[in-house]
Length: 150
Ligand code: ZN
Image (cartoon, rainbow, N blue to C red):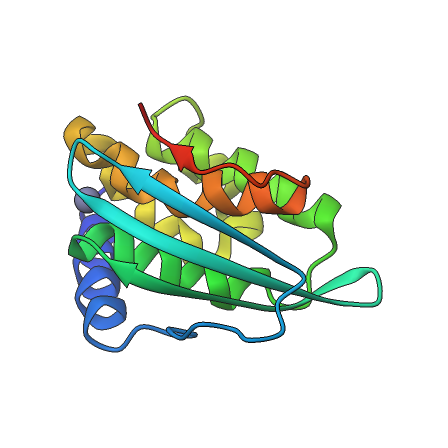
């Protein structure tokens, strides 16, 4: 697991310093707020469709390095995916960070998201990493209420 741990730290630091798609989208098709009261992570996620695919994902707000890095990577990974593909990644991502799925068996499907397997070693941070995914999952499925991890 040493490689994954190193990759994890590198990815968190990099995305936290230079988050992708970190802006409020004016013409979003869906927007949803996500809040993790345990840590204070609080973001709004924006989603725009391009035909039957996800055209663009963005977010704004504030929180810890793990939540911001997770939101940043999620926004990059979900662009161009179908909602069904996004649902599959949601299941995989939440599975590996909660330790329910062994990352080694899903490395190819996970791609860069495999870096977050390291979160499973820090149970207190799991909700930070999954907050963006739970919120986006809600937005994709027509939710318009604020998503809270509690
Ligand atoms: Zn957090």
